[in-house]
Length: 475
Image 1: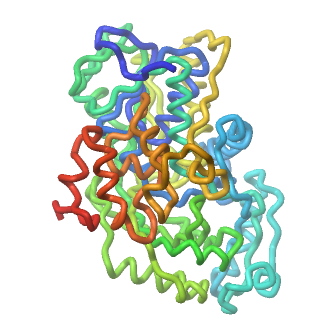
Image 2 (image 1 turned 135 degrees about the horizontal axis):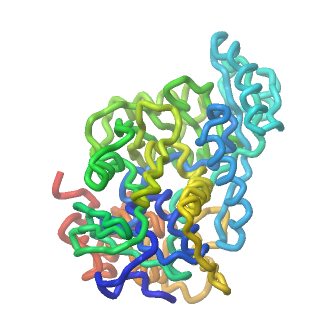
């Protein structure tokens, strides 16, 4: 397997992708599969450290996207390709379907227009349902529901394994990954770019800015202008105990508004039930903190819709930041003269649309007149599964014992995640790779053993950042 890490800064690349979120990982994969020499530059120690680390984990059809928008086209293409490749990469989906639910007369009056929009977007298998029909499908719902419609091809996916697999496949097919490397400046000499990073210069023919929450600032640094301004939007979530998953079968969606898709209730790929996200405008691009009042309101909202949730504990909370802009559509712009493509404003649908965005960006690149020869023997790596719908390592012989009993994470899985070209360099990254410490006890019982296993592997040693009870000493 390729090492992934560049052997030196003197090498030259066809394409440099700035940002290793889900979109950057998907773009790197597409270009590597097309034969380009690719480097992914990420300022953090691990992938998915920005907007991509917190989302709902839903594979959307794009039924409610603006008709004719770039977002809708990318979602449709991304959805199609995900289903096409998922078995070869061993990526899970839960075929739950979704119910769009109206809880007031005003919301019910908007349902026909939403169904018409779904049909216009090519999602022609949606069907209207009465309140009685909805309650027959989901008897755990509150009887206050007024009506809705069924979207049978909305699914739950694993939001962390997918982008990890995209970038790993890119690396297996020749791409490089430069982590802990912030892009500071850059210049285009008419033929190629020289990017100045915190780890030295990188030479590349084309730059693709997929920096997410910092995309506009990267544009300003490299182009001295930008066509959009990021307006961070925080989304907080509460996660209920796994036993609550028996309360529902479908993804429960609200009637969306102009500003947000609204608060979702659904199973996760990991067996829990989540409620969220909120939609909170803020100035900070880094503050993904949660607050008690908002979390309490989310819990109450979930119980109002699905009363049985009152009997179950909230076992985790988190927040994600979406790189929103003032525009409703994605902001993907190209500058052929300077061989530069900016991929901005990729909001909550980025997980579903990532593969489609990658294909669109590659089309812009080929319009520059650039072509490559794809590898003759593509590699399709398969990573250790963490979805509850797959066979996990704990059920297999030779797993070296269970370390995290809440999530049934084995020593073999942890040690594997600490090796290779995308080795986890922080507890947050290890969580996304294995689910360790993400169960009911939130690491109370396993952090001691985990500190021993990860000694010398993390930028900040686990024993320094956390005490045995799992509390961050720095807060």
